[in-house]
Length: 85
Image (cartoon, rainbow, N blue to C red):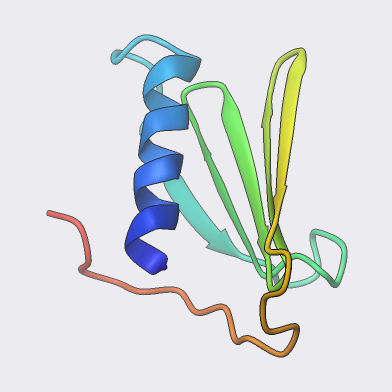
């Protein structure tokens, strides 16, 4: 599941802005976002919010929310370091 989410995020980022834009970065929510958001990714004009039940992509005038219907509501969302080269 984690690989699919990273691939989706990479595709969304690639289409959001030209390659010379700012790099993609992830941040853990430490009170700067609503409590339901665990992590945020931002780069190339796109922002993604990760929660245990959904991912919300936002880019300028467009927004996409993907919910995990039938998923485990108690899932633990974790950040991983060293996953990508």
